[in-house]
Image 1 (tube, rainbow, N blue to C red):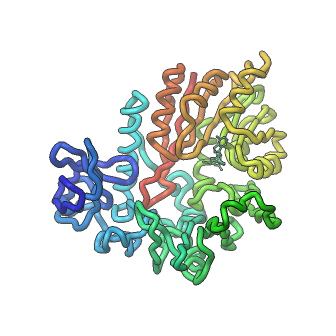
Image 2: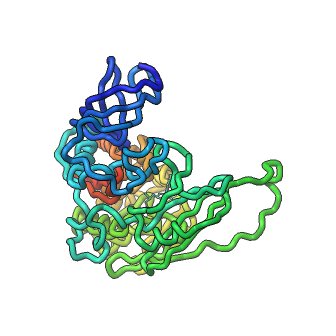
Image 3: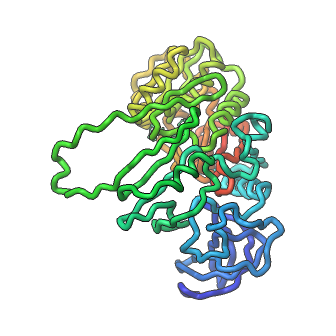
Length: 426
Ligand SMILES: C[S@@+](CC[C@H](N)C(=O)[O-])C[C@H]1O[C@@H](n2cnc3c(N)ncnc32)[C@H](O)[C@@H]1O
């Protein structure tokens, strides 16, 4: 097998990262744009010792779960390098997408967490109810993104990147974005080289945030910079609560995501001890600390986040709970706490819940050890990467925690991404 070979493959499984699995001449071959059970004509793009990568050119025997791609330009009928990225499950019927995500999660748990369990991936409409305003119009897993990024190159091309490359693909639609974001995205004719983030918060107005590429003279990088305008602050609404957040700061992408996760966290945790210390790690602007505040009465709550502007918003958003908002890297915060906690602090932490919602790379061994060292009664782990989550659950299990529940939510329909909530207890 060599790069450039065109071969026909039988697809036998799904792997993490939006690719499917075939076998050929003793190697695993990872193929995007396919489905288990299909026979697909592919072109080999990369050959390594034990595996290879390919691009799908044509479906010879289609799965009954294949459908016309929700983003026409990403359909297999187009040349692989012309397909925009970001919708790598868009050719699959929605129930099958969810089943495949559940399979990836349970295989990751079996492999990395040393435990097997059945998991169901639920859509936000199943958590919040089909009448919830945030799920209206998203039935096909489209029109949900309140945040998208467009890229602009030196030739003035504007659009998303192609799947698995940094080539910009000019597109004529953005079906995963809300209609308002799509309209703004398609109207952009000119922009400086770099990135454009389009954001539609709860007030419905689309904001355009320009992030120009650095094109200046690197030797002058210490020269004084022109005064930068303060970032715009927007409001996001979850139930009857408002959250201040920078327009360009972290907030969940799906318009029903914050409400779905807020509701799931509340249901999974139930009442929290009001005589304990609860932690919200990687807390952003305090979405989950607010849920904990509602559940925990007069308890002590601390949210920890590395972005100072997000922490400042969290302080404001959580004022009614008297919660602390600490700007720090979680590993450093935990190391400091391990040295400085009094006996009473430790006792209160051990009766509390520690919630963590790390970025895609997960918390890692050191942070898990830091949390386990504080011995909270329960740990709630919100995760956007199944493999990082499973690895970290493995570390928690080694530290004496048991997984008590695992739920998963389809907050990125038509892509391989999946959000999960794991609860562990000591
Ligand atoms: C997935 S977001 C979750 C935010 C929040 N829980 C929410 O749902 O809105 C992860 C957050 O962790 C922050 N972060 C990333 N690495 C961090 C670190 N090492 N220590 C503290 N915060 C970190 C990011 O700035 C981001 O706000």
